[in-house]
Structures are given as C-alpha cells and as structure tokens.
Length: 168
Image 1: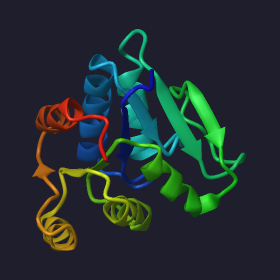
Image 2: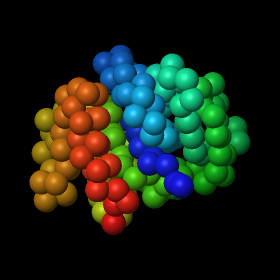
Image 3: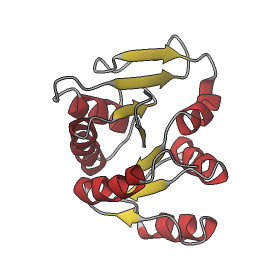
C-alpha cells in the first residue's frame, strides 16, 4: 500500500531561523503521523531542518530529490535520489507529493514549486509566509490556498486532506 507523502519546500541557504524552526517541528509532526516526508534533499535550510525533525521519530521515512549528484545531501534523508535535473527537479518534488507545504519566505525555487503545485492541482499550504506572498498565491489559487502560522495548524489541515485521500 502506498504511503501518504507530504512535500516540504522552502529556502535552502539564507532560510530564516524562524522558518528552520517551523520546518523542524513540521518534519517531526509529519513523521509522528506516519506520513513520508519529501524534500529537495539538500543539507541546507528548510530541507535540512524538516529532515532532522522527522528523524527524531523512530521508524520515520524521509525522501530527498537532489538536483544532481554533486549537491550536499542532508544526513537525515533515508532515500536520496540525485535526479540530474537541476531546478527541473522541482516538478518531481511536486508531482511525487500528495500535499505541499511551503515554509517561510521562499525564493525562486520555492515559488516555482508552489506554482507547479497549483498548476497540477495539488493541495498547497503556506506556513509562515509574508502578507505579500499570501496575497499573490491566494490570487493565483482563487482563494483555495490556506496560509497558516503554526506547524500544528498545518498538520490539522493535512489531516482533513488525508481523510479524503487518495486525492484526485
């Protein structure tokens, strides 16, 4: 049976400490639900923090989709896939996830993942986004994109989605 996959996206280098803290807590909460955590796999920022949080839970499963074989991987990734696709791997991050959580103030990579998720009609949740980003993505999503402030609120929202899983 296929397991539910939660993709956590966000800035790598330059991630704000508050985003890293939220990602760490979110990773742990995802693992506590028994869900698979998928990230961009690198040893930086939100990716590193989410994976570290998940690995605090015995039996957790983390998957990382690296841009290439030269990217430094997070030590907390169980299944590491060097895609060789560079930034195009953002599409794989989205398509391999059942729901996407974008943490903090993302850069171009995170913005592309949110846009690809909306285009693929994947559920997206913003965690700790700034007001301008919220307004922009709410407009793109016709208001169907929740913007939440805590990892616990994100998990509550994902649990609603999981209840209807498999998602269309």
